[in-house]
Length: 320
Image 1 (tube, rainbow, N blue to C red):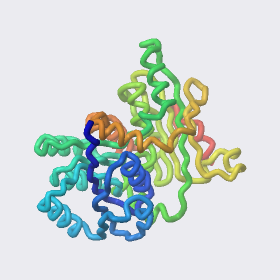
Image 2 (cartoon, rainbow, N blue to C red):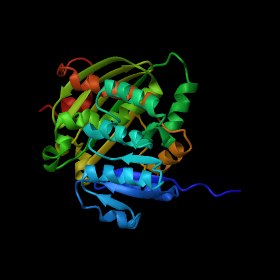
Image 3 (spheres, rainbow, N blue to C red):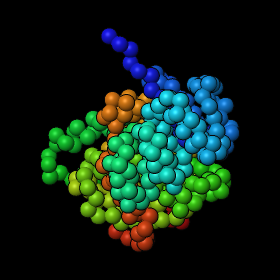
Image 4 (cartoon, rainbow, N blue to C red):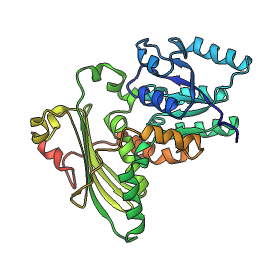
């Protein structure tokens, strides 16, 4: 039996927070990082995974290096993309035009029509675009989907989603604080939750925004099988008192019919699992990414109605 071929990877966005998970996944799936790019050169973490990888701080030299590798007969199989949200579609196009498949962090793109354009490039190049939607691989979430799929077809569930992940003053100065670059709070920290909810509970029938501010957003989603009140924030002042007293800066909660869904564990290996699925050609592509991109795009462009109707309880608690 022949040995499995070691695949060659490129990585764009090597200095970012999420790049570590991609470096680890490339390494632990038994593959090789050939070249990495980031305009910031604080990438010493690469020594723990791929010290022999070439590294560039200028896109033009990275592009030229890919051409050189191709002429020398070195094929780049995948390009992993961990860059700011607004650059994703450009870097995906770079990967496909160099004959590689793309693995991109969420959100895949900021606007639904970007997906249509990428679909055309997939067809032109014959290459694939994969999105990291790791919540779909979490054991608790997979089990929940199974239960909902096998439950009463006409049952509609009540869900409260709360996610507060405190960020400091740097956030507003970085690209994340610029809605044109990040898509705003609902896109930046909420897109994977919206993907998970529509994956399990079906299409969006109603989308209402109650609060839309630079540091927080809240609203209501009517899905085929769920009524969802959601609250997302990067403001530490929004943390529940008992969480503040513990000195914690993050609060994640999903209540299903007033019962807490416990899934705080099991996140550490989800990128590895994502890579295993992608390398087996079972990863999540453009089609799977579409619903969540459409959802957050609509949220970003809706005018908030204020505290009317069925809004999340944390909106009232933090209104004073």
